[in-house]
Length: 423
Image (cartoon, rainbow, N blue to C red; front, side, top):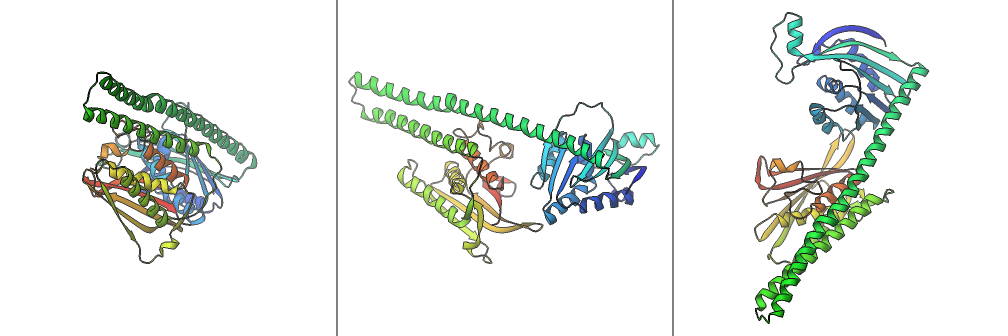
């Protein structure tokens, strides 16, 4: 499977790609049995794979054979959007290359560490191509880019494959090590910020409250209402500080525990236990006199006892935090929460999808992308609760997202969606 050819490809018409090139790369991808490593020195290569549905072949092979897919590629704003669609299926590392600026990108596909398919493309604006070739075609509304495939080649040369694999693995390992250093740095900054900022604020409130109570008593004040108010404020600050410390311990436990001991957990049972916990919490401490009511909707085709995933006891923390979040952001005295569980398939892989919807204030689109950040400035408290949620969901190989209960009307309440691999 060798070839050398040059032809202009307009992404508005994929049929213009020479069939020999399409057949070659499709055949190569379909023959992967274990691992496909992809090195794309330029971000335009990733867009090329997307525009002409080569990515679809990769995902299809991933789902049908559960192969491992690793991609090394620089990222820009446009390719980042594509990567977000791919990350459930591939391992992806964003790299920075100090290469001369050129329109040409050489892409390398390594199959099972034994075979290599490489091809080179040129990318230029559609306007540049039309002017060069004396054409005046309309620009595609989806993209202004035209591609040229310069050449492609297939090789099983042992030395070439060995050297290419070595370079790929070296870059991959260095990027993983760098990302781990960044992760540890951010974790250290998190602990420092929580201690110096959040807990410091709570202690300041507590100190101020006690000072005011002491001053009133020293002055011989008999204003019991004011004394009670200051003591209540101090008590609440102490409770919030304690809750924050508990969440810090949970995050630290998740961060330090590298070897997971996961077991079979039933999703409906975990959700019901979480609901009971939040309900009891409201019964014990509920200054705003709120009540919580949950309805769970399961697909009748499934026995609740069969809706299982691989997790651990901390699974309930996901739903405790989400239910608590709904209570916090619902102004009405009754907090209604709808839970729906159904099966969901990606190729041959089966998942359980959970949607948790409330009738609270909702979440504007401008806030959704930052909501899981540990120190989201517009959230009440420190935001550690939703950080724990995301950490646990990813710990159990799941994905989580935020939407609106009513499509395109965030004011009607929020929906947290999750998928977990079915056990």
